Image (cartoon, rainbow, N blue to C red; front, side, top):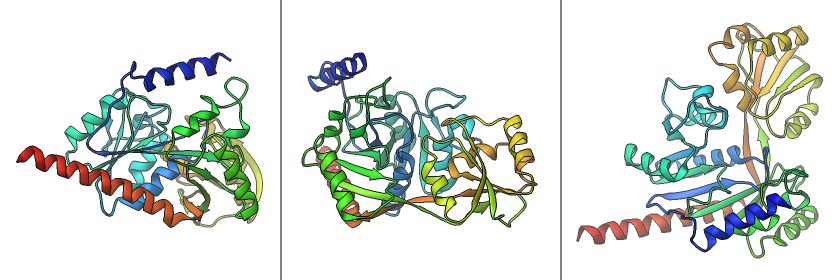
Length: 341
């Protein structure tokens, strides 16, 4: 297939050094996947922020998919989902007082800019960068959806894979996300299937832990019957979770990274009537934009926060990440000391 031939040749050029890859003094951790669509990359970035930000100064770097700006941009108070992209703005809104958030199409150029403008940065988290071979990360995390694993998928355009399944072997660890079971027999079966393509690589399992709904609008009471609004790659875990506690009257399912309009909001509000409207955190950061919020604020709009939760060996994953960071920073400190002497 054409996609397979192109990606294999591209990876071969990087492997032999014909196409250049760059390493940096800061610790670079990459989070990505083999397929297009949502596999839980941004929630994994959030997990790493919570794990590491108490000890280290962190910057996140994303391409900023769907933003109205271009080039390098360091997030500030004047930014929103349109200037940064929905996921980077979600990170900024949640962690603005603990991390730097940057966007830039050319990561190999954006990283030196971050280090120049934010000299205290020790760790850079690359979001959706598994195929971005121009930067060599110290640690590469490949995420794959439990219900749509890469080893059951096919290459574009027949399936959703960006590159051959064997690309999984480049990862340092594989995290199977959005698990709907913790049954050891099933998890072991998945682990064996993953290791056909990434032999000897650690395989971890995580699920989604949802918090209580948070009001966006003026009404604080959540109705028993709700309307769902999603513009994410895979809304199934979101809807399955809510089906346990609520009756879903209607689900407005938009494409991933959908840019909401006033017409969208009016249609949703009209259809919902007296029912509450529930959306994701990723969609919320777009819906609170200045042009949309006046239509949302008076109503019964809510979003559902979520976090990654490891099913087993979570402490082992944490230790692995922390040891990579500590070892890299130790080497950088030693080299810097040698340069001064």
